[in-house]
Image (cartoon, rainbow, N blue to C red; front, side):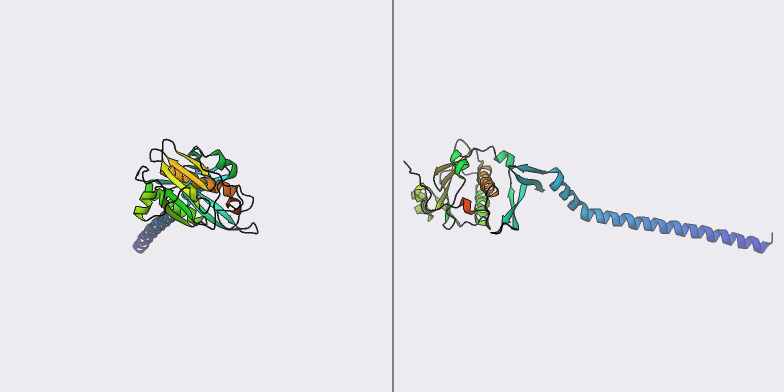
Length: 259
């Protein structure tokens, strides 16, 4: 074999080796790019996919015909439901997302007066609803946030809400209205107090009392809200807001006497 041919063959082998090395390097770079793209894709979309699966297939459940799904924000856990808002033509025009801090299945264990179970919660929809507190009720760390959320939900439900107190002297001194069950012929009164048992009772037509024990004010108020939603979902006629015509107190409704 001539020397020139040997040199050419050696150069050809070097070229082949360089070409193979280049292709191998390019393949590795391409693989790294693909891996990087997959990582970026997963980092962007996996949380959404995870939340969708958890919401729709793992953490969802029904309570009294209402679908709830469990969500979390950091260490906080919530129980949410999308409530359909229906117009006069029985068409769903929007949804209202309600969020509870307490599992609705646990809320359902809080006793509700049989008169509420029988007649539903009813409100004078065109008149102010007073959340009337006992000035001596237990001052718990959750009171403010519980009352804020409660007022916001009632407001979102189409009601005008104002604070008041059941203690006339304290109300006069603090500048807030004094409201008790004797005012329920003109306004819906929701009394809030602490006691030995967490429960919801109806003291008079259009006058309700929410009692919380051992600082269970959030579950107590959420139980009242859940009852409103239950009444709404069971209503035969839903009209534009969570407080329906079936939950509106009419002037003809009988008023109970207070002894």
